[in-house]
Image 1: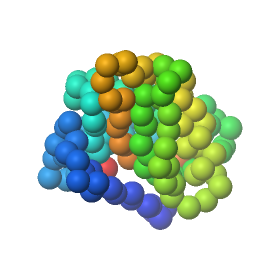
Image 2 (image 1 turned 135 degrees about the vertical axis):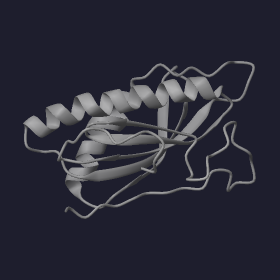
Image 3 (image 1 turned 180 degrees about the horizontal axis):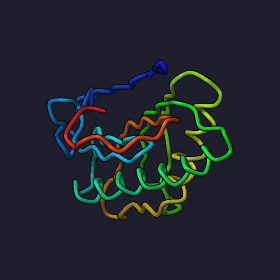
Amino acid sequence: MPDTHDVRVTPGQDGGTPAASPAKDGYVYVTRRAHGAVGLVGARNMPEDDARRLVDRIADDLETCAVRVQARGELADGAVQLVAMAGPRGTAEVTDVRLAPGGPVAANALECIVAPLRATPFAAPRDRPAPAFAIEATWNAAASPPPDAGGAL
């Protein structure tokens, strides 16, 4: 079995309260696909339903990309943790990125999560603070059916 690296964060460490409260396992919402899973750690200044839709989209993009990268023989087991916030150009700006070790992991994360996320429409309302969310994602090179919902990443 390949070595895995779980990445965890605790929302609200800055003294603020996220718009969505994390469940007991640290995630507000988790969605799974055959090659991986994406967990919503928390969201600010946005409805939880919008954050969940973004997490579903990220998971769909990750799955589509993982299939393509796996066909090239370049998919590595990996994990990423990041924060995204609405940018002035109406797309997501990705900050605070942490990756599991390894160059192939970084390449997979950039191609399958960061680039699609930066191309995602994510506008900041002019009269309110910019919305933001934090996610953690894991993926693996050996695709398997997604496990039952509700478990930890």
